[in-house]
Image 1 (cartoon, one colour):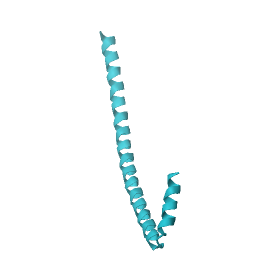
Image 2 (cartoon, helix red, strand yellow):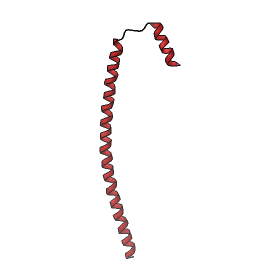
Image 3 (tube, rainbow, N blue to C red):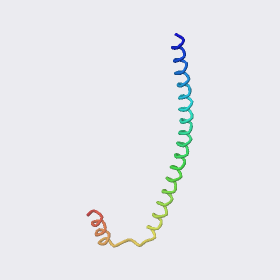
Image 4 (cartoon, helix red, strand yellow):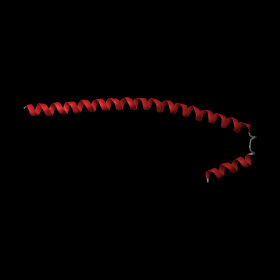
Length: 78
């Protein structure tokens, strides 16, 4: 009977240790997730800014004649 209590006590101790370990890991993962979400938002903003800059540059180029524009589109499809 005492042996069973001792084994149960050891298992409870192991469970408590595992619980603490998992809580620490969970907290670290939450921090990492927050950091990655922030980084993701920053990268999305940078992509958006780059897209706007490219669009502005493209607007400065003169329009291609319709014939050349069609040839360019045909090449992209093949």
